[in-house]
Image (tube, rainbow, N blue to C red; front, side):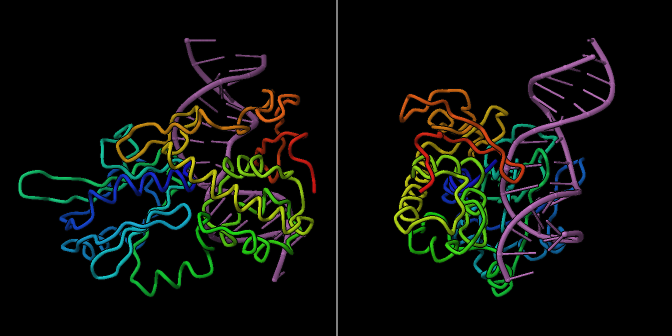
Length: 279
DNA sequence: CATATGTCCTGAGAGC
DNA sequence: TGCTCTCAGGACATAT
């Protein structure tokens, strides 16, 4: 499930290769029910062919490829989407292909998505800013304690649930929410409006630290093996998770209590009762 | 307005 | 073996 570190890894893999490249063709490629692509593929083809990519950026869990006429092509992988340069895990779930023809060799940027819950959107510049203005908060790597407190400090939601709200802060998903709250020593069930300034500071610090650490390992490839970097290689951070999917194991911090699993908003949360106490 | 729930989708794994 | 059922969860639509 690509969250910020996985999407950043895809971005880093793709950026140096497609920067400056001119699009020669756009294709959909899938026998399955098509994923959401906006606008229609014919219009995307007409608007992209002949344009060059000038930058590949990211906000939260989206890859944002910018063209020289300021259009933005946005990939949102959601659960199982991958942005790839190398051949995908299966040809069956390949959904979208950009072709770059150079002198001799042809390069491709592919979007592969097993479950097909992701989407691709092409925006004009103003359209892009308008669309995300009320949908996405600042990127989670920019988090500070003051900002999180200002955004979420009055919410009555449990903090782990609130951290998944992309309008407040963009990039934290279910896996890294558990990991960063463990790092911060905060009980995931604590209501946001019960958290102290100091705790918000610890949460922000842990957020930036954990996400960056996961980026250095190129993200987490879980037991289903779905997530891959742009070259179709597995990430390595799953071997460094402290709590995620480790219920029943001893807490790596106190080594006294076992990690437990609870459910919040129909999603799994993992934490240590001793190391993550309220207040 | 804030918060909670249902929905999409596929494949892995459990249970019989 | 082979079937059916449940579950995983990101973001949005709809309900409370």
